[in-house]
Length: 175
Image (cartoon, rainbow, N blue to C red):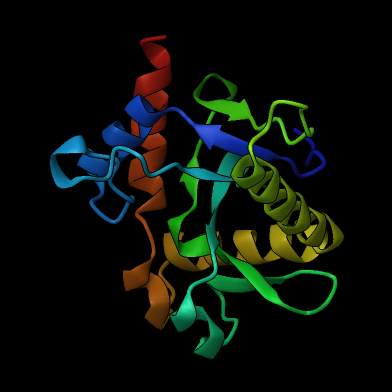
């Protein structure tokens, strides 16, 4: 399998719920706790010959003070403004059946907020593509640190990648 050019994808919410049941660090999309409108969007990289989606989050105040580390990166626009973050520690295994490519092409009927959101996503994706090699290497290094017997202190912040791969395989065997 070859690393493809990075694109932005949404993940099927039913699949996210299955992952969340296996590892509660997977962000919830449960309507019972008011999270049904949360989307799970990100870029797909290859780790251990599997596809992993690294979630993108929009920048919030706490991110300005955080430093990049093995499980976290900041995304900047062309002017150097912080616009998003990559949470490597929350990357999830995916197969093509669970993801949908996001259409970022402007449409004449887009609202102002839709146009703004699409442009923000385009800016985030542009930064990710420019830094693709670094992102893929960082994701693989974190995967290896978390799946081996390393003394990596950030392991507690990371998802259980091996357990989630099993959930992914079981989920796909039913499709």
